[in-house]
Image (cartoon, rainbow, N blue to C red; front, side, top):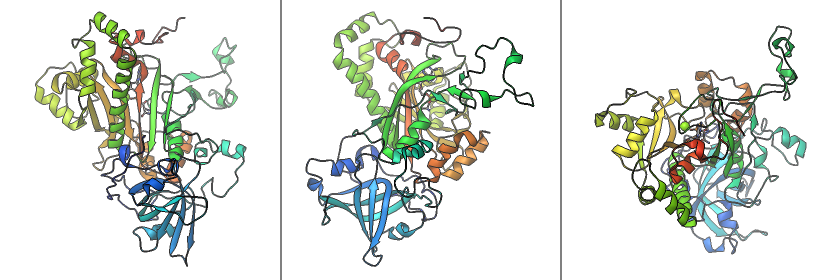
Length: 493
Ligand code: 4AD
Ligand code: MG
């Protein structure tokens, strides 16, 4: 994100220092208003131009120490944007100071700080950050945190791959860091059981009885290549979260695989997904980013390839009139933002007849989605706060206990282009959701760890690349939006 002058609204809910994570702060707009450490220290003037300006910074504590008989706290704050941390100074009369003295407010804990940039009297830095209010976001127990202390070996960090982004080893000098997430995984990101299994147990096996088995007759995965069941990933999100919870803003772009037996014009068994993941973003920030990103992509194609777009427009025979007019309209219009409950009400009020009956609790199908965006609102629509029952385990539970902080971006002629959410950052609630989904915790131990140590509110989304190509090119079927399509019973070429 571009550096900008934040206008923080100091409405963050501050947790008792002993609680692992605060409730998601409201009233913030991280998309445009937070300073990263790079925004301050990475400036050509070293931050001097920001002196006396007020703002918000947020990240993970590297070190915290006290001076002046315990009346002054010095925090080295890192948010992944710059290798050097920002020195934050907090006086004991400032709101939240006592939280800094809590045991779990140590290295690895996540915090928010409101304050201003000031000239630094210390050596080695031009400016520092003078706190007027601090809030511990996610505590981090120094006794169990694997990265407590200093000087970890590369081998040790490999064993802590979900936390090593919080060290300097993988630093790169970008706003959003491009992280390559693995294609082979042992956990089901969407928890929907639509994964292709990866195994060498069947290599050279001709008869079922030749497959390795345990003494009790089950398939013996201890003898499989990875020593346990493994699969092609359905989404890079979980790995993306590990990196965002250490580097701030990251994105991953790679192939994803789904063994769902869908023969529609929008489904592939192998497709590419762009998945940004942002620490300290709430659902509103997530929507802001998604809308800006979709518009950016469309604008980029229109300005970079005007001749191709004129040609595609001339051959376009699909619905919705002119292709170019539709794209221009999307660029010029704010996306409508409604809750799932409002969407259901609008569909019911419309009196339209649908194949599948509309009522609160249904997983909307593409006919409903398209009716919303094409007929009712005539804009792209972002639907939020879906019933938790048919959404993934990682989506943040809303206060009503019934819905989750999910968002789907629906586009005319297409339906769903983006699926995303604010993530559940509260360990206890997340475990409860695992139980509800009957998911074993063991394969997700690393995921739960990120909520144990310096948990932060964070959000992200996935945009199906071929669906974007479909939308922008006006091509009718997604199988023509990728060079070599894979779908049920088709893996040719
Ligand atoms: O809504 P989905 O399933 O969300 C996720 O996978 C999240 N883990 C993403 C995240 O939050 N990081 O998928 C995201 C998008 C969909 O909106 C759609 O555009 C595309 O991926 N998609 C498909 N595209 C083609 N064929 C399929 N079978 C697709 N399934 C999802
Ligand atoms: Mg989805």
